[in-house]
Image (tube, rainbow, N blue to C red):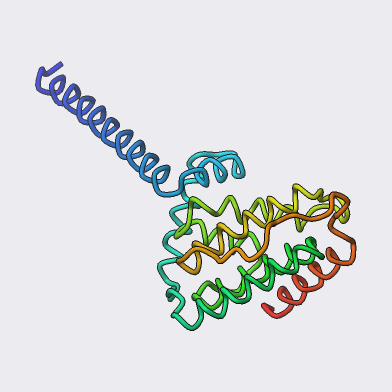
Length: 212
């Protein structure tokens, strides 16, 4: 065999090896970049999809989609309005904690729509939120799980934690600390009622209908 062909073959193999190293390095760099950007949301999506490559495509797709939105910060008048609304929700928590948690969820959704996030179901809202607020999207999910649970299954502590989660999210969305008007303390027998669950489901159903 002509030695030149041997050297050509060796060179081709070496080139492929170098390309492979660069590709692996690029993948590792992208993985680290996504981990840094999304934090725990990265692991959440990997678990949900069951595949790292699929999860990374999902996260990159989210970021690209959110770039097309006209997201803006609330103006001073809007921040004042929603701060007053938050105080109202907190006051409701004392006597009707289950209803207050639902109201907190709805208030957060209203703020997101005013800021420019598109109307969508909870998972869409959480996905879009994770791009700009990756550190607190888990608060959104934790609060929403209390609302979406079996009617009557939420304990006092569940409700209190849900309000704290929504409060963290609220503060991030409006860009300033919320005025805490009342402590999150309720009678130990308080649970989310079937009435509140039905109200929540009906509202969600109406929104789904509106999107069609």
